[in-house]
Length: 259
Length: 95
Image (cartoon, rainbow over all chains, first blue to last red; front, side, top):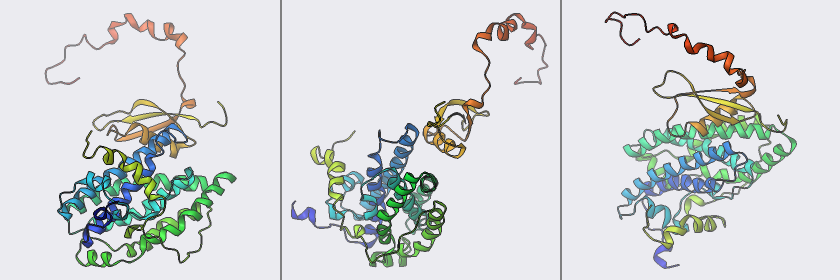
């Protein structure tokens, strides 16, 4: 890898903050599209592809704004397909492998429950375009939340096997949710500028959404541990490189190619 | 029906400008809530809908195709049942 690619090119807090949101949507959209053609039933296969496309749509809008903020002529495609791994700012949670249907659904639930208050906070962003994207995305996310919460309860409160799989998924994913709410200098900066909302303040809202559903599903919430992942600082898990090699393959091979 | 399979639901969608719900297909789902969500995801992806109905396919009572002659053919030559023999006043439009 050459040295210029490895150096994060962008530094401003607002830009990093937008990349965190846009990249999280992008990477989960990529993960969910792996289900295309593999859903447990036709209807759910389509539902998962719908969610994936909603997320990729959010990423397109946010990365376009990020590209403008950066002012180096990078558009949504350049940002989505041509960055090095450590320039992606997504939560580690969304890059983890899909696992089984239970884990996929539970992750969608945990992430949508995070996005809902995030979009609500961004609706009043000082950046008009970001506010508009948040308002549009909030509707999509509310449906994702409903869909995934429904499955969480069904599987958690279902058969012995589905319950066991859901509980396993919760134990696997839960430690990665801590990263959503860690405080960063960027958060402080964008909050005082009225640009965004500090992610650490979203935790109470998230818990009010998540905990009752987990309880209804009969799942046992794991104890918090000191483990914190660092995807939003560009330090990713071992799964990210494999995901990116698939995501970036076409643009890396035929740079600038368009449909 | 195989008891291990989810039942079939018929889906009716009212389009944005439409007045009535029209049958548009079917989905498999274990219960009404999920049938509605499945219908939303399968049949309203391209802004087709403003409202959805779903109903269990096995709850529909249908006429027997074999009984078509006695059910429907007798209406063929009863043209007097069409209200086309009345002169409508000009004020009554859009009938």
